[in-house]
Length: 269
Image (cartoon, rainbow, N blue to C red; front, side, top):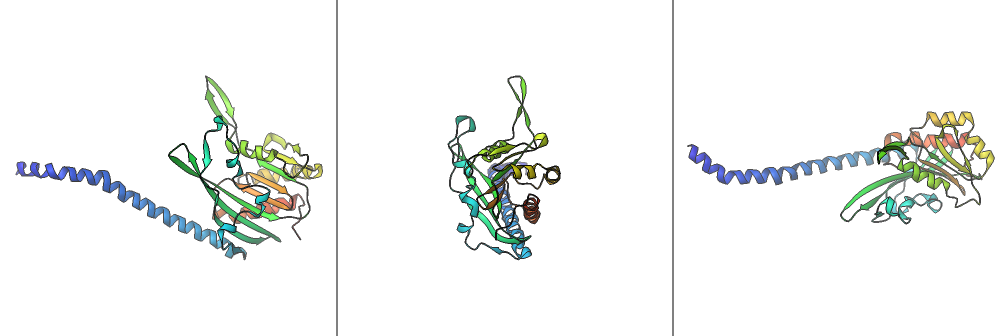
């Protein structure tokens, strides 16, 4: 009997090994893929419910769903500038893909929300996606301004010393805030405690942003604030470097409307 069992295992063992090494991982991968597809469908359904809630409309053809302020700020535009060796050889494999776009009325303003991603090649054989979305609205005549949210510095130990390393997103958006495509001269305004970096073409607008009541409001809403808010040539655009979240989208639209009201930026007529 034992001899028969041993003989059976001789030919059965390799089959079991193949099942464990090949079939089981494939089955688990298939289950993970189905779970991911279900989560994606639920996410899209929740996003599509927002225009219904606000009485807005989806952009039917997503190739026209890019931010309308894109002539002022190119979506994920920093990916297309020349890279230095220290920044690593990462580059986009294709232009940003819009996966959601809707026009939404809110608080006497008309907003467009555009969510997009880009596949980024990292090295020769690997890639990753980076996400961004923009909440924008046309505004009446107003000076130009950009304000970037600050992030805590991160300690890095190098060569036996601990140094403060500026968060990548902060470096990215601070650099963008310093650019001046629409004003001959931008003046930096420095809010207290270095919580934000701001540039404006008008001192009165700067004064409104750094007024104590406005700064207290910004601090109180720090988690919902975008990485960058820009006012340029009739557009306000708020940029979030993240995948869009249906649960916070309406609150973030209201936040941008509140901010514009606080600094007296009129809606477009």
